[in-house]
Image (cartoon, rainbow, N blue to C red; front, side, top):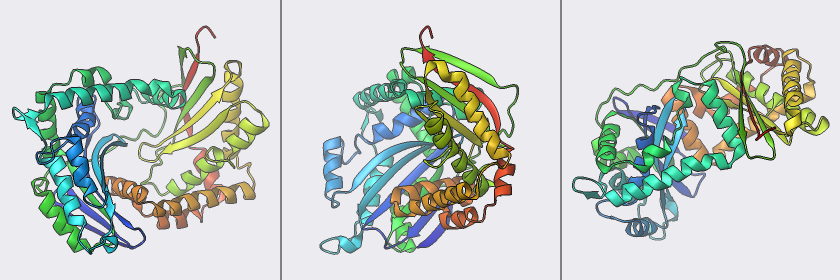
Length: 426
């Protein structure tokens, strides 16, 4: 695999992973802005409205037919959160030229189609079509309101809201349902123009085409975006809890309790020297079927229906998520903290450590087998100027992690906030 990077203008970058490993190519464009309650709803709604059609293909039927003509290319929007930034993306997957029946180029027409969708939308009275804005606003509101239906992810969502209250990280990347329902075409159009002129822009391509050819396709299809812009991307990292541990409890009509616990990592993020150690520590403690939370708290003690931990590598957080009986909240919480204390004291075997190292290194290398995951990693690396996309280098660092390093990192993990979702009246 040959990696290529080039600055096309201030705040505009192109990354190419040239590889013959896949039968398809992936082209993506991402516009990144600070995550804010004032702009999040519009940021999430814009790509959905754009995806309804362009000036040349003014509805989804015609747009779908245009993509089908490119050997069944797939073109779709995505809204992602990276730290305290909102990333508005369009991703297009299409057959590599090597497999086109007549040897025709697919990259260039795919890039042109993406450019038309992003930069030449179908309009009504100089702004977005009202019916598109209203229908997609209703759809977005439904998505936001449906979050509560998955109680496991809802508990983590609520934990983050409470733990990071006052921080941009707590803002929902999809915005606010009430705002989405009443969004006006004129307001959304103004937000769209602001996004085009002010966002940081990252282009990504993975596939067999030469970097020079990719750059030429991008320059032709996205020329209006290739203007300089001052678009810094940052994420506030709070190393330690700002006060005593808080416990927040919500009551809902549920039959199973949810216990979520948020930890600060002592400032360790993907940019830190200790990040490979944190990955191993997290896996040994709570990520995976060989972790201490799974083997002890769930299997041996039978205190949880599930129990696992996950990291946010940009914000410096570790979150434990578990499902418990209402009567077992205190005991499960105690057992989870006991397992972390065991790790921080170095009370784990060499076999446990090696299993965690193998799991992490295998997962990291496995991400190179997916076009989508490689794009996701490269985007993070470019936005935050870190080695997030260098999975082989990171895997090699993981394989050198020692028990003493894991113990030291575990001691830096500090409990910040506890969230409990319990039944009404329990």
